[in-house]
Length: 344
Image (cartoon, rainbow, N blue to C red; front, side):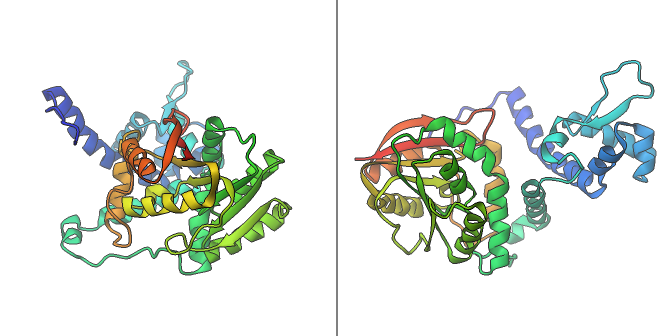
């Protein structure tokens, strides 16, 4: 049964309404920061007064002053805490420091997702809903260059994911791990290095598998990391594993595909083997869910309701014959939850 929602109070109504508008405004503010190279300016010059920033970026003075105030509101800028400083100087705020490297370059994942989001927002949504042709992102990636672009996303965000997984599970007693759609091998190499008893198999599409093999060779990890080519939509998974891992995989697929993958994981596991799912949950990440689902709305290759609540995973796992052992919900340090289940 769907959860019944109460009508918002007048204050809640206004908060929700302005949250919608603030999201659109913040997106444009972030894009302006990138386009004007403000992070690079602050990285090279240090803290600057408002007039110095306005002059350096050739801004209209009054509008520039309002823009700087807005950037402070959203956490992209902050004032120096030294009250004796006159005029007040601005430096990179906590959000800018989180999204940009020390030299002022934006981290690749955030820059690319911002680009994709703005491209989607520039389209006439009503016409899109009525069938306007839109640029499609092919899946699976058709070329090695497309695979490199996808796997760079996965590699650049792997550190947080690895930490989240290691907080949820110990690899003690696990000899064989199957990392389904395991990217360019970054996570497999890390786990193999850290846990000497572990052998990791990365199962991925041919172009991504080619990239992963290169990384494994470069890391000198070939004895305990192997690469198997395949398309999980059509091919069976290799068998005989103590642990099967879906990390940043299931959130991109609708329920029918996820159920099929869980069935395949059942056959890949030894009796009593475990399954690990590391994904953002819709009920833990409402804003992330809206942003990603809006992006996917424009691409016909993807299904409906990709980001799912915990209850959906619980139901799918039960249907596939798994017993849930543990659920670690999202924390302030991660967007992901981790579900550990056991083959019945």
